[in-house]
Every structure is written in C-alpha cells, then in structure tokens.
Image 1 (cartoon, rainbow, N blue to C red):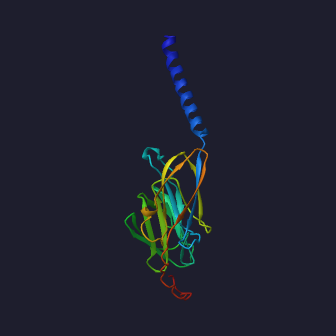
Image 2 (tube, rainbow, N blue to C red):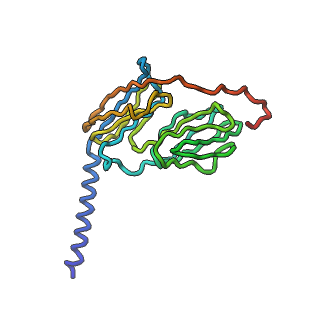
Image 3 (cartoon, rainbow, N blue to C red):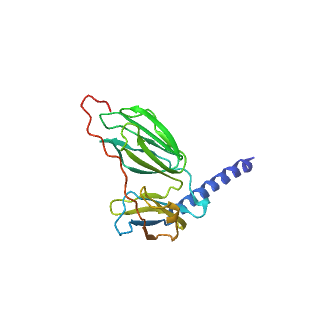
Length: 228
C-alpha cells in the first residue's frame, strides 16, 4: 500500500521538476532584436511607420499579449495619430477636450461608433481582427487617426528618427513588413525574409515612397457657447 501511494507522488514531483527545467531553459535561451529603419525615397526618416515581424513558422506564434490601450482626443486631434496594437487588445478613447466628439470607423478590420460624448466612454473597443483601422470624428472632419492591429506580438512604431527596435525575438526566420498611412502601394510589397540568430541585434533598412498627406482644413475656433 505504501508503494502504490508513494509512486504517484514521485511521478508528480518528477513532472514538476521537468516543467521547471524546461521553463528555465526557455528563459535562458538568448533572444534577439531587430533594429528597423524606415526612410523616404529621398533618404529622410519616416516617423509613425509600423514594422511587424511574423515567424515564417506559424507554430512559433505565442498566444496572448493582448493589452488595454488608449488613444486620447486632445485639441481636436487623435493622440497618438498612429497606434499599433496586438490583435485582441482593447482601446479606450478618452475625450480630453472641452467639446464633444463622435468617434467612428468604417474599416473592414473594425466597424464601430462612439456616439457624441464627453469624458471617457463606459466601454473600450475590442480590436479582434488584424488590419488597419482608420478613425474619424463625425463632428470634426479633419480628425483622422489610425490603429494598426498586428497578428504578431513582435511589432513597433518608428520614432522621429525613423527607427524602431523590436526586442525579445526568439531566433528563427521572420517575414518582416512595413506599413505607413501615406505609403505608395501595399504593405505586402515591403515584405522581407530575415534570419535572426540567437543573441543578434540585426539592423535592416526599408525605403518607402510616401504620398503627400491630404488633410481637411481645420474649422475656425467655435464660440465659447458651443458644445462641439
């Protein structure tokens, strides 16, 4: 009787030790990074470009990483203008202005509407489909913003210097692409296969021709009595 009770305990202990050893081994595995730089055809840095690295082996994609994100409305503009999120994340749209906004999108990746409101809407919006979501305000036509919903957790947005570092990349082969709101052509044309070795900081540069930005002229400041 003593043996039959002891063996399951020993097996459970051995399995727990094995799981712990595997976890420690994965944690000790050196990860890599991609230093991506995006330039215009004239060699100028491109800000607000989204760079996405997708493992060529689809099994390598981890689960999770969805987060609660936020885009503010400040001075009748979306801040930030471009937001990159992982699929499954939620985005809140706080209105920091003294006027009301009516936020919406007709994009196939996410159609939604937040009717005229001030302050913070009661519920954030779930972005559960990969793609580009163009934001607008039904009251202020010049307000335009973008949410890039990435299917891979390895992505980032370039800064004013045109650079972004995508860290903690497991060593393997990736298909890397670039998206920008003003780019000419489709983002698929920017795809590049990159082999990233363990512990490597790989640098890569993309040249993306941009179209001129077309914006609706801002309306004159409304009178103090207006709610819009």
